Length: 104
Image (cartoon, rainbow, N blue to C red; front, side, top):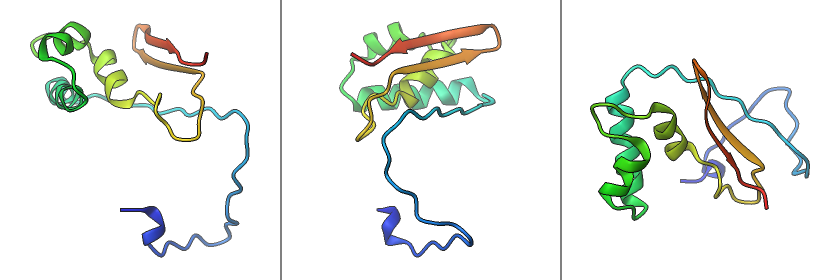
């Protein structure tokens, strides 16, 4: 599936130009089911080739998951095509929980 496969019309909107520069993306999540988040993170990690023991070491067990690590594992943008991600952070209610400098 490709976004170009759909006829999407946005009134009063000019086509975006691909321009270089720095962009900042902000997403706020409300986690309503930590176990479902953990399960999704496990499936994602196993599909990427991680071993179950390594997955549990990274995101914790189902009974006590590290929510910020689950989110980071699922949303890590390091493979975003055409982009050089400089930093990636997940912040919980208690402040910075996960931070990764990605730029070389």
